[in-house]
Every structure is written in structure tokens, then in C-alpha cells.
Image (cartoon, rainbow, N blue to C red):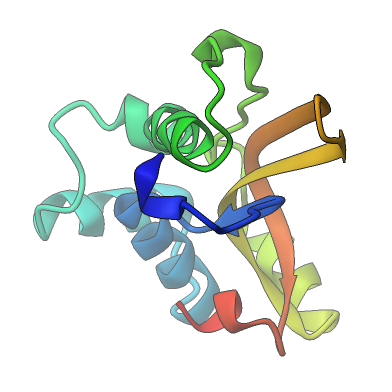
Length: 139
């Protein structure tokens, strides 16, 4: 927490898992199916032998929990953070995202609201639509 002394962080939103980001980029830009993208990620060494922690969003959730502790000084039980992975995404999802001018990324998002002494912290990990002009769309 000393790394953020003087900073008032109220929101963190980002791509925090490389394997899933590689897969989603391959599905978006190259038209890969989920299985093709996972196979490519495995062949390149981005995915573990058992990729469940990555594709289920659980690795991102663990990292988000650490960021919450550093940014807000709160301890949160991982199971309290809603988590949805990328296993249900299909080519159609990316076609719709492209029609709207964006893409899909697995994001970890946390936000602190409220007043000093009465803060509320929320968080989730989920595939999200990202607009084409958002810097995250090109990561």
C-alpha cells in the first residue's frame, strides 16, 4: 500500500491475464474459434497444461484481489468477487462487437465509492465489450 501513498485510487479497470488476452485477440482479429485460440495459446506456451485458472477468469480474479489490497487496503475473499471466464464466447460475439466498432476483452474491474470512513468496494472479472477508441481495445 505504501506504493500508492498520496494517490486516491477510486477505480481500476484492466486486462490482467495474458493467456486470455492472447486468445481473445486471436478470436477477434484472426477469426479463431475458442478451441483454436486455446490450442494456439498452448502451443506458444501462454497457457498452462490445465488452463482452467486462465480461461475461467480465476487467475485474473486473484490478481484483482491483490490490486484491491494495494489500492484500497482491503482484504477481500476471492469467492466474493464475481467471476466469469471466456469459455462461453463464440465467433458470433466478436462479430457483434465488430458491428458496434469494438471488441471483447476479459477485464478485472474494481471501484471504491462512498465517503471517507464509509467506503464501499465493488469488483468483478468478466468478458466486456470495449469500444474501438478505448486504449484497452488494442492491447
